[in-house]
Figure 1 (cartoon, rainbow, N blue to C red):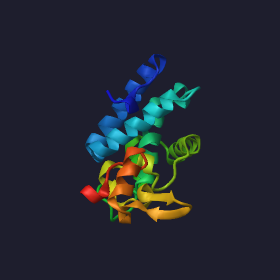
Figure 2: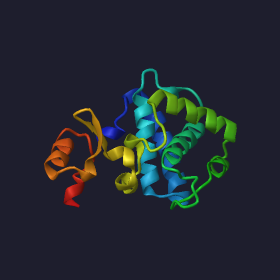
Figure 3: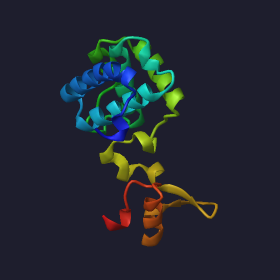
Figure 4: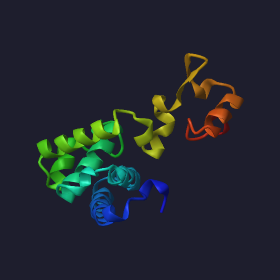
Length: 168
């Protein structure tokens, strides 16, 4: 288990239920990446004190987690693969759109998540997310992909970027 999936013992049964629902949904309708990142979000919510997942139905939280990750990664955009309108996502979970949207907005607010959020970008989309690569260097916004290799390596060493783009 990775650190991103660790949860307090008291929240483990709730996490296991929500993660199982996420896995099943993503296996059928999306892919493993959506499952992985959505589980990481559920685990992060379980670590909050108090955890919002301690109250409410697991199905609603599972739907909201996938909804938030889908929204941040433009799942609703027809040019994306996989593609799934967020209203259809709610329908497939069997959750009302207003309920899912309310839960999703509460997650976004609590976790500070927005479109293209580098922390919640699918691994396959990291290279194309401009926010992953924008850093402030000497007071200037810089796309680190265009910086010298030494700066890229330093940014990676400091944990500011997921990998050194000059080596790919």
